Length: 326
Image 1 (cartoon, helix red, strand yellow):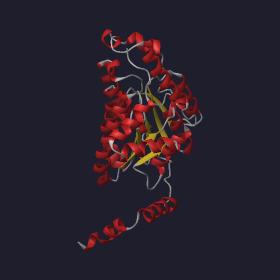
Image 2 (cartoon, rainbow, N blue to C red):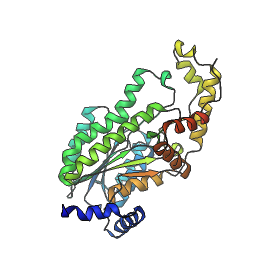
Image 3 (spheres, rainbow, N blue to C red):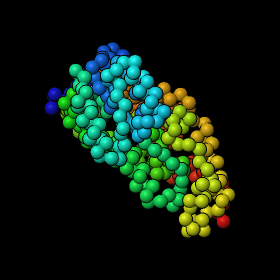
Image 4 (cartoon, rainbow, N blue to C red):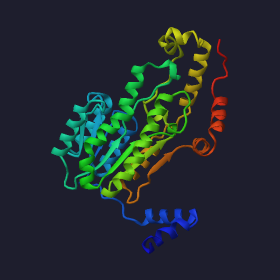
């Protein structure tokens, strides 16, 4: 009983002093030495994964950059970076929906492990799209679940033995969209599922010294290629006859314009998110969650998390379509 007294005392302290103690610890603790440590990143063709691969390589990590298209421009740029320092950057084909790709990636990592071993897995690969629930086919739901959710689980399960052995880090790419949705419920669904998977994994891995971190970006659509602008005409043409009987073209156009307006306001500074990913990999005391978002985005998450559902539904319903259905 008395052994738990220090913990109980900490729990009784007001929150601000606890936060100050945590920040002081993070400042004073020694940062990680990257040399001789390997990190595998998925989704390095573009966006955050691409920027992170370049950053980690320049910091001194051995980087295994998984690309869906190893012959694409993003992969070629990484290969040019690797040419300046042969051996510390390896670009590999990695489709996270294919078990054999994941196993091949593991074999490559095992055969080229640096002296300090495997330090980090960054589950960054993901896809996004727009559309109301009935507009999307079952095949599309299956594809999104396979890439955004099962793909991350697939790579995590393959690399868990190495991560436990070297007491490494696992970083997952989530989103503030895990808390609410504005026309991309299919993406929101997969990110909410990733959050719960990470919550379970984080607690289970503590006993092995493996730390699990979640990155929650706000709107960075202009920094990545994950969500291009949507075309109302294409959406309409792909709707089933049943859906066309319910919705009209004006509604689809208004919804597309609304969503494209959100995309156009996205931040262009993807390095803000990469900074959080680097901290998750290198900090002696990484956070469980890194929310990288504008103040108004954080406020929306706050309302969603703490207020009754009816409040959030009212806020989002007001923000969404003003067009009446036929």
